[in-house]
Length: 247
Length: 247
DNA sequence: ACGTTGGGTTGATCCATGTCAACCGAAAAA
DNA sequence: TTTTTCGGTTGACATGGATCAACCCAACGT
Image (tube, protein in one colour):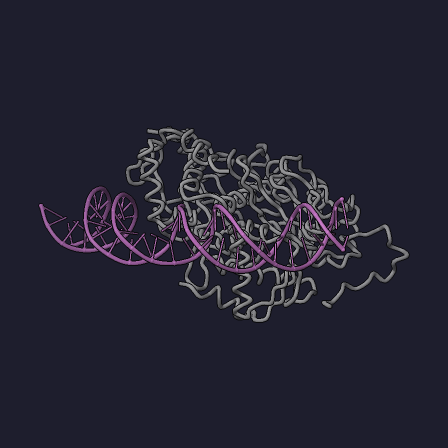
């Protein structure tokens, strides 16, 4: 079993009040770097927690935007739809990551956010978040960093889609997941995929058959052990080597 | 000749002082929506204008980040380099657009910004920009919108790279350029490309030969007239139809 | 005016990935 | 328990775009 998250010590006092100040994701999430007093001000702002069941939408493309969401637990995907029916998964998000940043630009969401497992989110009404970040420099700066990080991540995906071959893409994908699980205190070598081969393929610009074949090849080569959605990474360096190989 | 930009009326008074308040790009750029008093406060912040000659770097990946840049005139590309030598153009930027947003996240630039023609930029020291946007709500909000717009744009590119075929990608690219030229008061139907086929290819995840062939096909079909870097769009709807074609 | 160079075009061939189809197994529904 | 469904795997074949190569043209330096 990978590590579980530490239990809240004073359950009796904070059953309802699940605030940033008592959230063990605070160092990964929006409250990063805030002091206690600032944390409490942010607590006042988190208006609602929402439970989203697997398969349900947190929001849909076209809906008016007014909040950004932090994932408290669970796993999401975001996707965009073209008029002609084509769609593409633009990202997979896990605990501590933010959803909805794309909506700021037009004041409408531009993608769908769908839970890949039963999940919980915290809502930050955006205008109030802007208000608070005018008062708390640290919050403002961190929020800017989070947005910028999203831009950098997108550039990475563009690189992946534009220059990498199928197996390189999948290797990059697995290494990225592994690294993010590690940052959350889970095993870097063993995890369950929450998404289907088709969703992975959509994200990586590949067909599901190609994804499946790449998994099989990785297994043959001894890089990983695959059993359905359960992945064990046996040779991280093998995967890394696979990526830096080409000129 | 496409429209030229209106000449500054009082050259004698404002030769040196080239500030946001007198910039005809202000409605496209960072100062969008600010009133006169706010504009003047932003003017105080624009520390330097830089001239960048064609082929020169505005900044390089890895350099410490401290300012974001607005393009006053000219044309840029940004690209990322992988260790193994592969690189990808992540965007083309024109007057009024911002460069450097990717650097906020790590406090180092994560890509190269290279002028594709002789250009001029305005520098906004980022910490001062944050300071001012804590005081000017409109500026703060607009800045957030600009960052968000960049994220949305990137999703569009991911879509393009992940789901479109070569000719669709090129059509999307041309339509996007056309639309941005229009927004700047230039002809939507006639323009010069500032980048090579190879750079277009890199951006679109294609080889230069494929780009060249697609241009030729568009010409055969009568969608455009190509002569080197000079493009005339003859049939916008033809290009649009080309994109919505597939299921 | 001439040669050089870099970008662009076009053709022939190859290959990675898409497409189509059969089949399997696990989990959910009946 | 049986059946259905959905996701996944694997094989055979098709194809879009990459690769390799020849050639063209315009711009620029000498």
